Every structure is written in structure tokens, then in C-alpha cells.
Amino acid sequence: MSRIVIIGAGIVGLSVARAALKHGHQVTVLEQGPAPNPQSASFDLHRMIRYPYGSAEGYTRMVTDAFGAWDRLWNDLGTVHFENTGSIAISLAPGDYAEKTLNAFKAIGLPHEVLTREGVERLCPHLTLPEGAWGVVSFPGGPLFASRIVTELADWVRAHGGVIEHDCRVAGVDLEQGVATRADGSQVEGDLLLVAAGAWLPALMPERFGEASVYRQGLCYVEPPAQYEQSWREAPAIACLGDHTGYTLPDRRGAGLKIGYSAHRRAARPECDGFGSDLASESEAILGAFRPYFREFDAYRPTRIQVGYYVLDAARRFTVEQTGRGLVVTNCDGQMFKFGPLLGERILGMFAGEESAGDLARWAAGY
Image (cartoon, rainbow, N blue to C red):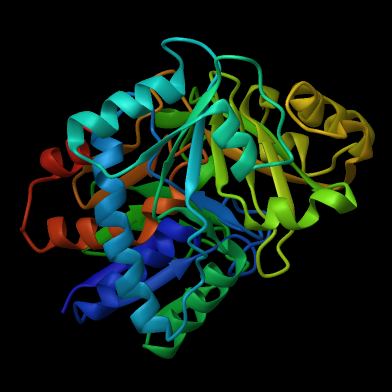
């Protein structure tokens, strides 16, 4: 039996903890806030799992394995925190993200349905699209109810013998020796030390990751016009509108209708810039991009902004780096949540000798 030490109780850290406990190891999780932490990138009412991934065939293929890992997690939790609404990628111009997605689906042999503009508007009567638009629909896909997942996963870890130290600030990390030093000077050593600190990684390990690009992202929850409440609820999640970087998640299980616009992100650090938001200005920046596509646009009422922080570079590929006993997971963007349980299983498989750290890193990068 080995000792696994994990810094960060988000979806990655908790998934590794679960996998380690299922392998019979001792587990200690160090979390700087409550566990789960409402300020972590993993904590939101819902997050999206979907097949559309543009030309990134590696990640498109990974989604199938991710669904298998989620099924194994549901078996452990005894409940399913997912709604299979399907997802749609909408094309607005030749060669855009949706067309790249369709080409990837064809190359992989992934089942899908292509809809004309009229077909998309019948499926999503709250949308109005320009001539020449079309969509590609795929199943399964839809909302993962993130805050419920990480809450119950943390409970599962505790119930199965894992130790989660909440409000525990880590002051130092020795990857080579697998040692984490707490703020009070005490240390905990692991045969595997996993660092899954999200946007706090540059501050935690400035000598190695201090220059990593960290971004603040605001997501807007809205109340749609009354005549479109049901159509939004029944529609598939929108993975993309051309190269618009916009996406939506339907209001299922009371989570609310969520609108995201990736171009709204800006460079910032959580420890410096905090989690406040201005509803009026941020909702205008996010929702304004959808004005040409939402029917009765002026009747949408923003209710709140969900703020999250991510490490993200231009490659937009997950990074898994090994040094000695230490393993750092970073560059997760907002895309990691869907792969959390699968990555947890793969990391423990690597620890058990089932694959090399290099192979794990290439897989995580989508190659």
C-alpha cells in the first residue's frame, strides 16, 4: 500500500483520490479552502460534456472513454448527475469549428445528424440563424451537474478512508521527493505527490510555473423570455456557434440556463483579482455577442455571473508533467471537468506501471 498526497480538491484531485482508494492506497488531500471549494474551477451548477471538438480528433475520441469513466463513478456514487440532452455545433461559415467537428466525426466514424438551418431552428426555436447555417447534432452530451458531483465525490473519498484537510494552505512543494510543506511548517510525504492546484499553481510553484498564463472567465446565468423557457430546456447544449466561441447549457434540474462566451476571458489571477463581478457590464459583454442569434433578445434577463479561473496557453492541450515522485496537472482550461474521472483512472494506472509518464502526457495532450 502506497501513500498518495494530492494538492487540490477539484475534479482532478478528487478523481485521483477515488482511484487511489480503489487501488487500496492511503490518500491525503490538501485543500486551501473548504472541500469542495466554491471558488474552484470545478464548482458550478453545471458543466458540459460533448463530442464536438473541432479538428481535435484525439480529444473527440477521449470523450467516449470519458463517458465510460463517468458511468463507473455513477456506480460508486449511486446516482447519475448528468442529463443526456445531446449537443449541437452550429456552422455559420465554411471551415469553421462546426465544419471541422463534422470532418472529425466522419474520420472517426462517430454517429451524428446534420441539420439544415431550418432543421436547427425547428430543434431550437429560440434561435434565428443566417442563410447557409447548418448544425451537427451528436449524442450523448449535455450538462454534468458539477457542484453536486464534487460534493458527493468528496463525501465518497472521506467515507472510504481518504483524509481531506480543508483550509490547509500549502507553502512549499518538493516534486522530486514527493513532499508538500504546509503553511505551519509541517510536512506530508507521498509515494506519489499530485499537484492539481488549478489557477493557484503559479503562486504555489512560482519558480517553475510563475509565468503560466492564468485567465478569468465569467459565465452568465439568464432567464429567457417566457415563450422560450421550455424550448431552451428541451434543446441540446450548444457547443459552438461557428467560430463565435459561444456556448450554452440548458436549464435542467433547476441549474438554470447558462451562457458562455470564451472571448470574454481576460488575464487575471484569483489571489489578486478576486471573484467579484459587475452583472450589468459582464452580462452585456457575454450576451451581447448572441444578439444576432437569439429571438426576442432584449427579453433575456441576466441573473448572475459565475467567475472561474484557469491556466491556459495557446496550445490548449492538457499538461501532465512528472518530476521524481511528483506529478503536476495543469493547462486545463475549462475543458478538464469532463475528463476528470478518466484522468484519475489513467494517473493511477501509470502509478501502477500500466503506462509510462510520457505516454500519459501524450494521451492527456490529445495525441
